[in-house]
Image 1 (tube, rainbow, N blue to C red):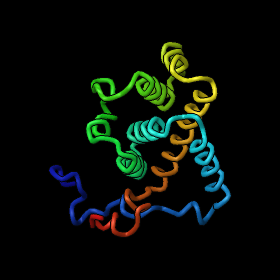
Image 2: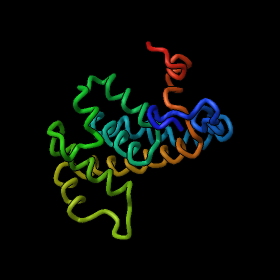
Image 3: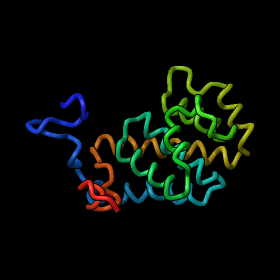
Image 4: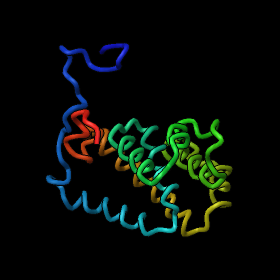
Length: 174
């Protein structure tokens, strides 16, 4: 590994350039079931920006490069300013997020990094103070869904940018 660029040396085989399989072709029913959750979330009362922030933060925590790339671009396409996009990873220290978004991000972190105690009452109560029950249920579903997508993406080594086409994966700009 080139320590400066963080890239594989020319003589190293890269494990991130080719996905292991295309689950949408091999098990289309499973893939469509996951998209059913996405359709639910798109129509849910959860604000779209919050949904994308949750997806980005969980993906960062899980090391899913494909999903980090996708949700960063989704937020940017929705008009999110760079300061917020760049600060999702440090949301606690950045002044760019609303109290409701902070509650959603805190819940995302605890539900993504489940420990023996699960999600704390403090974090749950803060989220419940900002979201009514249907929206809170959608938030919990969003967190569970992105964690499942992350596990698919990391396991299959999905290539960042590949969802945008060949130009994205070759380094070309649009």
